[in-house]
Image 1 (cartoon, rainbow, N blue to C red):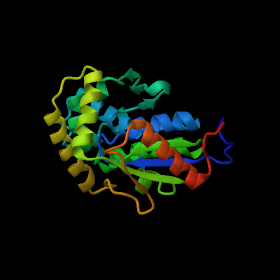
Image 2 (image 1 turned 45 degrees about the vertical axis):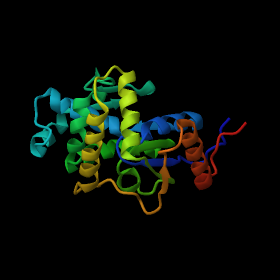
Image 3 (image 1 turned 60 degrees about the vertical axis):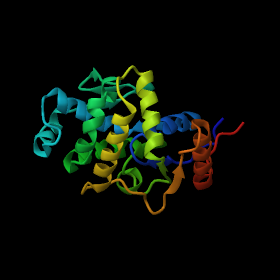
Image 4 (image 1 turned 90 degrees about the horizontal axis):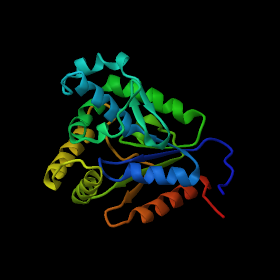
Length: 230
């Protein structure tokens, strides 16, 4: 049973790639009966379309020109569609991971997707994870968490996750890619990856998934009073 919520509550979880944000956000949202919004999947979906069209993901103008053609849908059970094509598995491929930071750095694409993300949070309680949720997408979020972990820890987590999905990769390849993505995400001109001044820093390097979920729920309770109870 969840304590009755008088108004929609927004929870922003930001942090670098492979910090486990999506995993934690999904579990916490399910427990609290909030809507989980995977903003990273939206940028990955756009990246998928860019590559499918044979456009260079490092050509900002060419990528921006595709905005009118792209319709991204987030459906229950984590299903992601682009123009009605199920790309849930495809957007987790290494080629997407290697290029999504470029797409996410383009202002016009971010503006188009951010508008969708903000609309989702207007009338329902949400947990949204990404790079700039607490600083740009939902600057007035009720709860802001900046979730981090060491590069090596994140690389191991992503490597094991890819193996489970049957995605071929190496640990060294992933670690180098994470370092590169961290640099791109934190140095982009528009809405870079940075901890919001009022965000709670949560280092999960030595924590289990269950421990992180419990801590996130505690933070939400401390900030809003909302917490699952018997």
